[in-house]
Image (cartoon, rainbow, N blue to C red):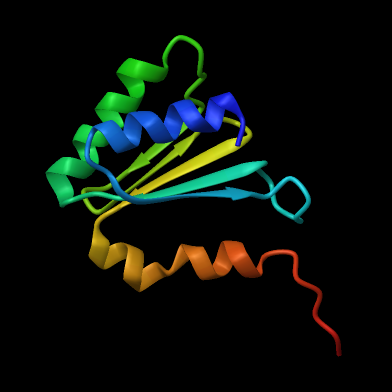
Length: 108
């Protein structure tokens, strides 16, 4: 994992995010190179984790867009997407399966 992904995961980890996963999508058919998924402890923690990312990653990172609800935050860094979700949303939307299956060949 490169230093950039390590820095992002370190910020999440030291601020109590759980089950942090990094998906290397460079060889997949996807619009970003990496996706990071982390679980928060609840809606307020989701927002707090976003604030920590903003404080600790700027000015090195350019936050292109942030889509925010209490249960799920998506941060677009251009070639990296960071998903922070409550545990309930993480189970419901199962992004891990989607990202793991991405790019696998389907035969007809």
